[in-house]
Image (cartoon, rainbow, N blue to C red; front, side, top):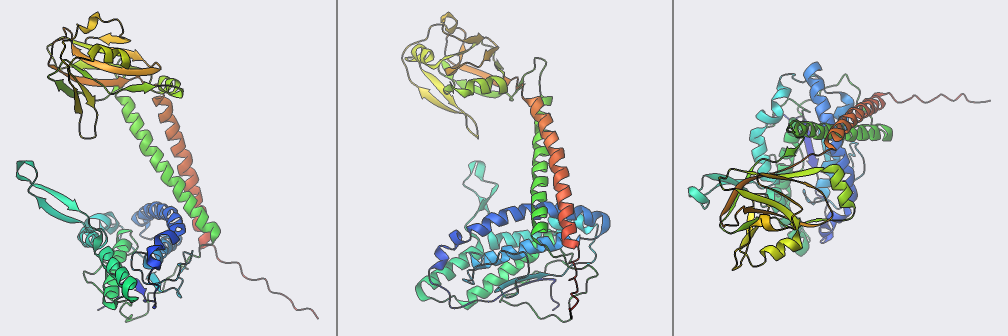
Length: 461
């Protein structure tokens, strides 16, 4: 059996502390903070490597060694914490190999990578492995739910922690009560981690060799049958300046992509502006068998007034889809409460999956709403309101005050800030992407630059 170019090894360092595993999550917080930034850089640099491979067939060596360092760092932290609990030795803060640490990771640098395979291997070809690794790491189980309406027919996911998490929990409890880590459990945990890391390296374009479908248990890989392939590219040495430049550049580029996505969304939103300058939601059907529909309290005070006036602008509420003449009104909550206090009506409570209704009982029939004088804005098919301070309520009724109200309601606003926001986001996109790209190139060059030779010292006589 030939060896795989991704080599994951670890040794169980015994004896292990019985209770240290309980607080390792806290001890590892500094690593989690640093890794959160490094993984943003990892993702951005993988995208850069994608295009480099697509056009040149090569993974830039400086980017490869940086991403390998991130995987090494992650593996060491995982082995120390709840990916294995295999050592009590605190992980070093380095992207380097750290061969003296009990968890190591090596990936052979590929001189050439397939330019076509890069388009499909990270999603299509790796899909079978994702299903296996998902079971190892997140415990996702797809099953048939027959209890749903209409006899089921919907697949759902049940997450229960993953096989690795379950086995590490067993090892932790064994440590707590016996002071021993079961070696069989350790070998199985290492095999699952090895499989997951191999798939991660393949999916992030670091090798073209398809991961084997085999669970190689134990802390050590198969011995090499031949030396690793020699590389014509000198391994990059990432000093502090290179690491900072690559990380900051990748974070800036990530921010630029986020700004571009947000700006695109804002531009598309602006395309929905109607002839009157309003941008609105789609129609939502509202109905009740009672006399009125009311909104929840709209409280506006302090700085919210100027913010909403500048940001939201004019507000329009419109109704359609009914043959019965309607009345739309907005008024202060106290006045609406006095008007509908003894009238059966329903308050509309918006939700992520649709509106809910809170019925307010009463015994009286209301007077026709248009006869009331407290309304701040009214209309039959639509009303327009300027934001004012206070506590407000929107009311929808039949114009004659009879029960059974139904309509398709829309809410719209002029959003005067949208054009400026869109322009600002695209400007920020250009600045962030240019700055990020410049720092990434600088970091790669700093890593690829040869170390300066020592200056010879001439002995004095």
